[in-house]
Length: 414
Ligand code: NIG
Ligand code: FE
Image (spheres, rainbow, N blue to C red):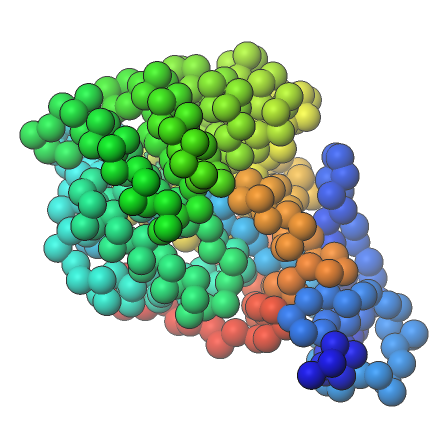
């Protein structure tokens, strides 16, 4: 069908349309009394309600004064996994730390055991239900990591599941190979790391990029540098890293220097890392749900990052150990209360800022003309209600490429 023959959908009577202007610095633009025109899954333009020409419009949707925001971009998740880690809640309250539980063979390694056991279809089904629930809560783009296999078979199984999710749900999904997530039971760090390096080329057809957990007792900064140099040579398009989460290792400086798209966590980042990230345009992905769930006290230096002009993104980290929540609305609430990010900045970080962490900011995250028409209709006309009445679900409808999704109820089990 010729472009101009495709039906024009008019979302009218929008109480407040929130778009993100890319900047720098990015800004929230709020337009009242306007209509959003969508053709072929993309935003065509925004016009005043009074200027709609009914002759051109094929379908009209009356949004009854509700606010419309760009869909959330969850740019850091481990949402394909088997089992749960509910027992660790009590272990932590009894004094065991996240790393101690891992070093005793629990933590990530217990999810590895459960994920290896699950069939590809079972993993796909549970991850699909989880993603559909996330979409119901307003998320319209995802990053998904492997990292619960630590062997070729299971890492590849996880990434194939990610690809099936991407193909079946019509949402942008970036896939990341995280073979360097933990050290399998009975192996040494160096031997396992060498295994990851030797088999890196086999993951090129399966993943958009690579990630590594850079931490004392896990992988070193030097190993991260080695992985990134090799990944770039091989043609992986995206580098990202779990860095400065539980201690300061300086990994974010090296990651930024090597052109990483994002550095994630960053609780212990120093001025040197912040400067390097600002200079290279590396996004800081912050996940307050982890701090909240693990009961941590250390917060990332958010004020200093903003002052230096670092692009900030918010994400859930959705995983069975450090943040089982998959709700970006909760992340917004926590960003306000823990990081003192004002609502406009937090919303920018959860949409445009996070799209930038995935290299997708031209395509989604801002609800601008030409971008995907992925958006959430709120229950009210004021987007700040998302922050104010915290704990409820303020997303009434989620639209993906101009199509309304059927809401997914909370599944009995993920
Ligand atoms: O981003 N830091 C390491 N990895 C994940 C947690 C994964 C897990 O505990 O299963 C994180 O917090
Ligand atoms: Fe993570």
